[in-house]
Length: 550
Image 1: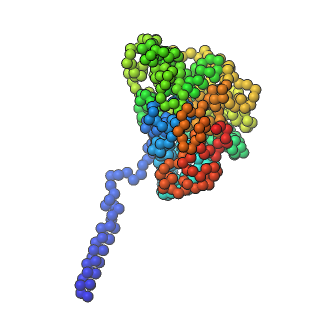
Image 2: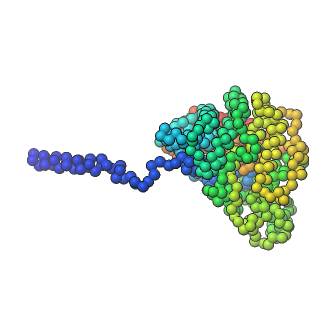
Image 3: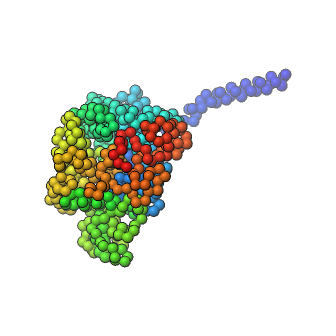
């Protein structure tokens, strides 16, 4: 018994010691020099940069290896990029599209909301965050379909998947409230240069919020016409982008040493798509004035026979793109006979040197003063899109949208101006602008559906290189689609998908492996209107996709 009491006493002493030690455990293990709160203006910078794939890795594995190829702006020519043949790469989709919203947008948005009670002067910054987070949420649900939203990034391990309809309805609320609060707030902290989109300009943030509201309203025109009209007409009454000066562009010069599209072009793994080049050559009676802004003439055409294919047997052409889904240079699509993205916007010397005047072995940097860095913003919303949205709204009778034809032509002119904005005026001419607009398949007509096709075709061109939105609009409308008469997207040459039938297009990105394996909600058979219970299927249409293409 004495031994038992003695042991009990020792145990009590040890317990007291443990309690006394662990009672101050948190303070003992907290770095007194570490910041406990991050200034929201710094969070805003990271949200803007990381949330929209500004960095080269995320841009390549997201935009370039998925949507740039899906929407046929570019064609991958490296055989090790299987996504161009509709195969799946889980880590690429995760880094390119899943993390950009859940890690870099939704999480800091929640963190900043918590700060507002203590620091109400951060409200304007929070409203800016709400706008870009709403854009990220829309992009994510447009990519995947039903996804976690209301309980996402809140610490819940297995959040439920919300319907795309519910997500869209909440996005309208977020954009409306953010715009209204930005209009009424006073005495607020200015993020200044930490805002790498608008430099803290509240008036332009309000325009962006309303433009987004119009974008997402028109996306619902087929599936939810009443909600579409209500939200669109409200946005049309509000302040919208008025010129290219209101374009929302992320200033990558400060964060990434240039636009990622141009950075990864030096890795020599893709060329302009045949779809894109054919569209620019054949849509009007004159060549699209934007072609030399965005793309290069072929090396063989520009620099002579030493750049032609080795057998000197393939006809040399001025502009040419590679068919999508080919994944290698074959026959006339030899590397020397294809256009890349080294146009006047990024590499003005490329299209200007005289034929045969450049020595063999030259590289792209030789045509841009030896620099491999192109300082251009990543445009996430431009004025041209607002014009095309208004054109569609006017064409289908939405109040306050103006005149459809005027909006349509203004959209084309805005795209011309934006494309030339960083190019020396001595490098181009505007003499064919009106001829382009008023001839061929571009000219406005009398048939409503054909005029809508024209709007969407020019919108698709004007989006370049914003392939994420271009892919969404193709899936919503089915335009532009190649039909033997009109240029547009073609089914890919080699389709290796296990879920997308041959001769059809990808409908959405499938759910990630971690979601399927760790979150049982990702396998709920009621998701995506119960179209397909397979969470790995890429042949499932998202809510607003009403089957206007195969």
